[in-house]
Image 1 (tube, protein in one colour):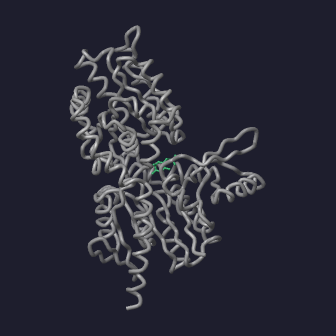
Image 2 (cartoon, rainbow, N blue to C red; image 1 turned 45 degrees about the vertical axis):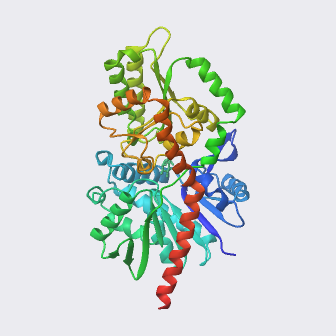
Image 3 (cartoon, rainbow, N blue to C red; image 1 turned 120 degrees about the vertical axis):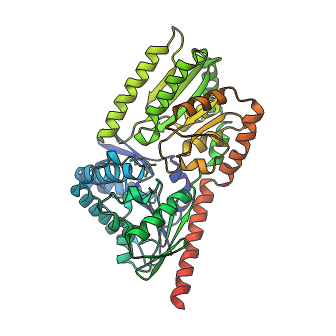
Length: 472
Ligand code: G6P
């Protein structure tokens, strides 16, 4: 029977180790939820890295057996591969360039070699289970070479690729010494998806500058094959976030937030630790706000959650130290005996706590310097069942194209962020509702299940179109 193989760098599981014993828990991430309906079915499978270094062959085999019951298949990475493929080429070369922070990028031959070899490692594991009429859906920037490698081995197989981070303008992309190899790898797919029209346009532009291709609208002809490139903005599980608002555990947490913060107005900020998220600039804006508007001292609180991430990569370590310092300075400068301007947490929280915070906060402040989509902004909107609350959103986040009723700001413009916060604090309820309602309709309709369905349907259509072309 025809099966679907999902491939991403990380598997949708959390592994916890206790005295050498590993337990697996399916993760609650957005992609995992969206693809859950697919990979759990029949003999479909999700292939990826379990996120832990496991070297002992007996343990590897034992875990693989547990994974099999969940329709998952592990790709084990060695410490060297973690250093050079994951931390190296993926997160010190591609990530900064694709997020327009090219000063952070390192172009190391050893990183590239590891990237190539790990993409091959994924290919070899996939080839053990793939049949020529299967569908393979590859995800994200860690695996850009994989579609090309799979195509070479299985010319007829159906391959979709989706990029979850931005695709930069050609002027940035061209900086990468291995730009042609990367584009060739991506073009192994039949259908490629990006979050925004700009990402799609940037990809089409890069391809036509670097490779001898023919491009007509959104179809790239290369090596006698037609590759379709389209925009599929990813959604969230709207139903989950909307209904969590009525969950007794969440309501209890909202109540304790109310008791804790009384009259204080809460500004919520939630990100993974990353320089692309604009956390330092956001803190600067908040500090300036308190300086320029002392009337808010003692009345507003920035509730800031930073989820640990990639903390073995030097820039992330530095960023963490800088945030610690900045938060310490602001709290020391403005605090009173009974009030702290910033409540800062460097850890992750269960979804029930996030839901309580989304429900309780007057404002959600999302100001990345660059973001493929940004799902936090959509989770906030989905959680606001009363249609109140204000979303302040960076124009550099993919989500700003859909959530145009948010207060849209340039994250480098501290004055604009401050004005947006003051406007949000003073926004009358009818205007909050006028803005929130249409955003909720968008997030509800274009949810993650819709996104998966749209991509898979389109992939089948593209394959039919290719077959008709061949038959002619
Ligand atoms: C972004 C990327 C994902 C990645 C996630 C977490 O959302 O698009 O591919 O999995 O960040 O990063 P990590 O390095 O921890 O996998």
